[in-house]
Image (cartoon, rainbow, N blue to C red; front, side, top):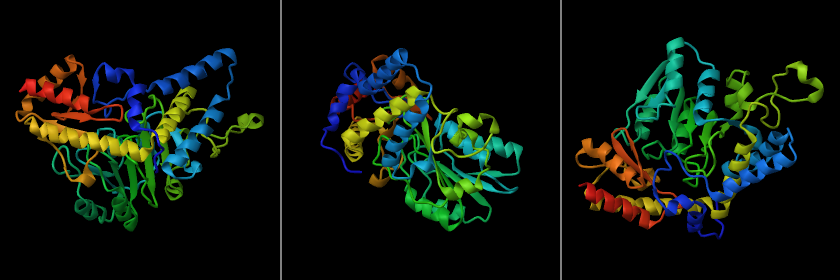
Length: 382
């Protein structure tokens, strides 16, 4: 997606906290920019003056229009849930499986990915197979391993993150092609990709995609987008009440029709979530998603070089095509990572400590001064 002319560095002005603290933890929880907060406040003030109970219908339409542009898919393939985890649970609950079917999951995915299927495995005769990520825990599963796994005759689903929580970036179109070749449903969690990368949905026959926007996407919690292809929806139980909700017709409210309306209504996110996401997407378009990605990867590359210079060990796959805005790293004495994280946090330098590793993520509201502050503090921890 082509960028506009705005300099992405203007985003620093949208996040006042970025000038008071070092915020390198958006892979866990990102700040909400001032323009998004102002849009939400304006909506709430208007509700105080003129309450209207049809806001969801209007707001969902505007948000869908922006998501249609961002994801380049028809709006009737999109719907809303409250969280990424909720979307993953929907698929694991609604997709029809037969006894003996296999679900493939990388063995270093965030728990929200495998747990819904493990819960179903407890209830039904399906098998969850874990694929080995390399290097563990911060790498990914190679295409060769995926290709071998999906050839198994009973594989029903492959579920993974576009960018996993420790920063590995999967080659999604190549994976989608393998899944299509063998009739496998591909489920993608895009939460660590949308807002970070100039992300393009892969073309696949049976694709389920879900992403929230409160990490990289500038939006509040409480809303996530779901995209499902027509072929996949035909394979899912028709009880998708919370995915597409139900048809509202004031004259026929008691007909109880399980139909698919043009817009998701009733059980969807709160109006302020639509407002926040719409404004957040506008900000991304203003900056240009390609410019956002370029800036994030530039900062990430600088961070990696300076971490090495400070004597820290970079975890994960360092090939350019597998890198993202998330950098997982470690002190040479890995057992010190927790103590280092606590020291940094007390100094107002916010990164995360996960899976025994330290994790930092640069966004467009960061600059090289933030990286230098982190490196200086890490050197003092040595």
